[in-house]
Each structure stands twice: as C-alpha cells, then as structure tokens.
Length: 90
Image: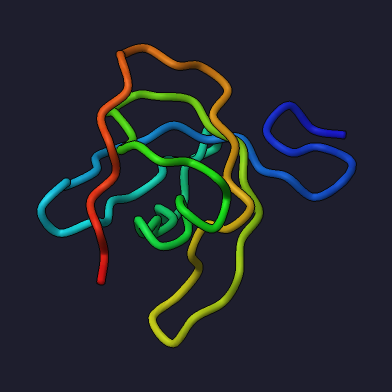
C-alpha cells in the first residue's frame, strides 16, 4: 500500500478549491498529476451534507466521466471548519 492509496482502492487527497455557487471543485493528489473533479452531487451520495474547504483532507475513489476522473465514495479525514450545508446541485 502506498502512502496516498489504501488497499481497498481509496485515494487520499486534499481539496484544492470548492466553489459553493458552482457546486463543484477539485482535489489535489499528494503525488501531483491531474486534479480530480468533485461535485456536490457526489458529496450528497457519500452522505456529506456540507461543502468542502480548501486544504481539507479527504479519501475517495475515482470514476471516469466524459471529461476525466471524478471523485466518488468520498470521506472526510480532517474537518477544519464548522458545518456549512452543501448547495443544492439541482
């Protein structure tokens, strides 16, 4: 198992940025490379009911979409701020 991935396929990363109004953002991977897209719909599917904060640490799996990889099965590892409800992504 590497330091940035678990045996069960989860990847560790940190939030590069998350725009509340747009309901999406990007995860930065520890080893560099392409950032991974994260959308408020996937947060809700993962049971997360608030926005993500810059530099917040998460673990997730990826799925392939038409524009590249996006985060699924997201879990918060480090919670740096009080809860702010996630936007309704419609």
